[in-house]
Length: 146
Image (cartoon, rainbow, N blue to C red):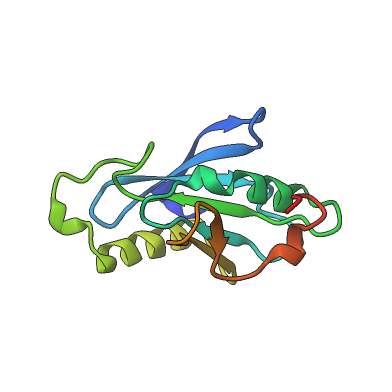
């Protein structure tokens, strides 16, 4: 990990993830749920929730990918500024796409994550089911029933 930019706040062994915080370029603390080991054999996966969703939505997927005996992965689920344990930004002008991209870049840089696989999700308008933009079901089909 890069300097003092990232630090672990606690391991939740009962929930199979560690809480990690990274300092954003403007000084806010951002929370990441980290599953698995940094020395995992497969590419890391970074999970990006839709605007009204949370990093917890990825828990079954992240735990399954991290614990896969054949191909374990480091999985990071990012908690956006103003959500959950990440700090709230009092300046509403900082809730923009450029700031969000800078936050993600700071996280990936601090945690030295490259290359990686991104797994964004969005909520479909016609149902309550959360669908991935990228179909990675083959990676965890044996762990997570449909």
